[in-house]
Image 1 (cartoon, rainbow, N blue to C red):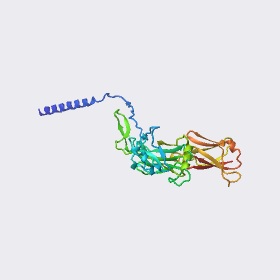
Image 2 (image 1 turned 60 degrees about the horizontal axis):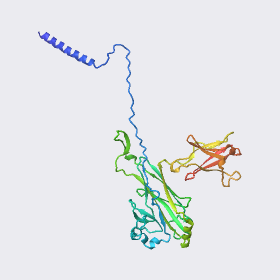
Image 3 (image 1 turned 120 degrees about the vertical axis):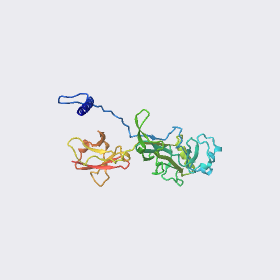
Image 4 (image 1 turned 30 degrees about the vertical axis):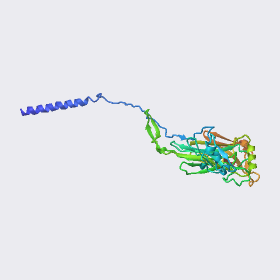
Length: 382
């Protein structure tokens, strides 16, 4: 009896185990009973997206041309404003809509004045320097700010490199551009030297890449944005400053007469571009010796450089005087060479008609038109 009971338990357990095995077997979708066994599972790729982390956003001065008066200036060579304590421009004595009247305590006396204004357009003072204009870099990368100041219709006025023009024999003007970063550092000044040679300067303004983050916008798309509204942006500020004087009453009346109806003008321009690592011009390749070919010219590949050190062209090509090497170098006529770009590489080609006259090896010097007037030399062998 005990054996039967024990046997019944075993049978029951076996049935339970059998049921369990059967349950697991249903997980497989197909029982394979023959070989070989092959299969393929496929999937598709999805592009998550892309954000451009090279963000160019620059806040530039807002100029209400032609009514903007930031760089309008008053020439006062006899310092009449100072001698009269500025009463002509006092609040009680002027209805000039451009000046509105000012407190005579807010005049920075000199011999040339700019009308400084508050943000709302009201006059704050007369000063020997203009208001600053501001460039602010809100992008993720550095930018280069290029500035230029030029004048015209200045009559017979002489330009001075010195701010103190009071002792000059002839009527003179000093105008200069001043610039500095928003912290007041890296200050620079450049003087307008003539009608044809204005003032210029260049500065690099840092981007704020560290303040940008990848985010998901309201359209559920990725974007590269600043992390908060409290980002401190880098910038560059610039203005004009000036003085005038020298000569006497008759001299200045003659200057005014020479100007006629032409109004003296100054223009300040700015150009802001992504920063490029400065590279000086140079020769491409490891050799600077070129054999004169039987036919055709000699082609020299050059690098124009980049950024603030770069050039935009060739200024001249020179070579030693064949008659006497101690004489000043000869300048190669532009008709004897060409400069062109081919597949992104600049080429300087000495024409065959010129090379045909060579009777000995000759060293040529290429001078680029960059600020440093960089030169490279190469030799043509015959």
